Image (tube, rainbow, N blue to C red; front, side):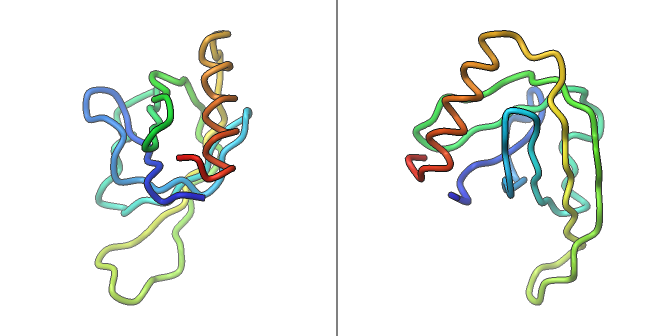
Length: 107
């Protein structure tokens, strides 16, 4: 997968959270604990270079765990898993397109 794919929220845009896994049901990503862009949002945006941007996807937090400390990275890293909720047909189509192209490395 391509580390240019990022996750974020609302007007702050998709930034600073690297995707670890994505499916039609949800997404997992890692982020710096002090850079929690989803803290005050109930929707998520996802983007990668050369792929359609996904906006305002509703979600439910499934897990949020601290990762093992990585040498050279300041601050704690975390892994968060989200379950997508109430997606529109257009969001589902765009998500399917995103997944197909992201996983095949066309990002």
